[in-house]
Image 1 (cartoon, one colour):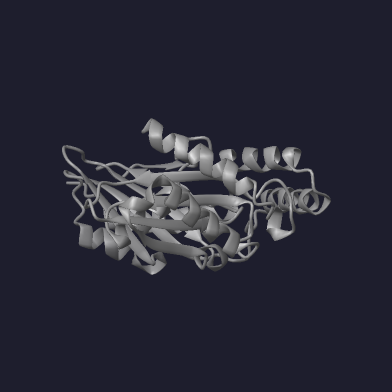
Image 2: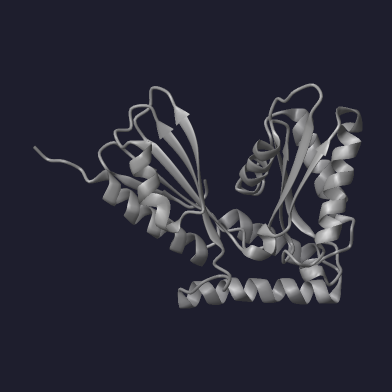
Length: 266
């Protein structure tokens, strides 16, 4: 009888994901940075973006880190109901490189998906939460997001990705904001009303003039993503989480047989 060391395989996968995410940024982010450099009109902004792109190329050529701030490793796990490794064993395998593990259990599935999103302290420090009231409406949400990004200025190393979480409880809204920053650039929320809010916030935030590294310019954010959840009729929690220009992420899909498929673009 041949047994598969799933816990050991997961440990190896977690270690690989963290290093891979730190050294090789996704293609959608690369494309967004190139697009930003072409749209930027301010001299300091263009200089910053040119330096960022050169930094990415040097990291590729030298097989080195994209940014010296390795941050904390945040793992999100989608666990199949029939995946044979108990969640406590999964947690143990991820623990060494994990600040927090989030779980989504999938019925009638025997696989495991793990996404690693290293978060630098500069961007993670720029996290904001407000318990709005329903009467504030969409206008209140926009105002809070705008105030948060203006207050952050150049500290989170813009241009980056702004994640907004709306609804649920206070802690769940922040979780949704973290989910939002992990989405590939170019994706839209499937809800057309939320997708419209994403577009409006993206345009609004780029009108601030904060620019690359806070030196002024046209491109302050590469994208704004919004995730939402149902909540109580008297609640309206809104969370903002910032991801710096080096928006690193990497995923692995693990089958019940121990086969690992690494995914750059998920």
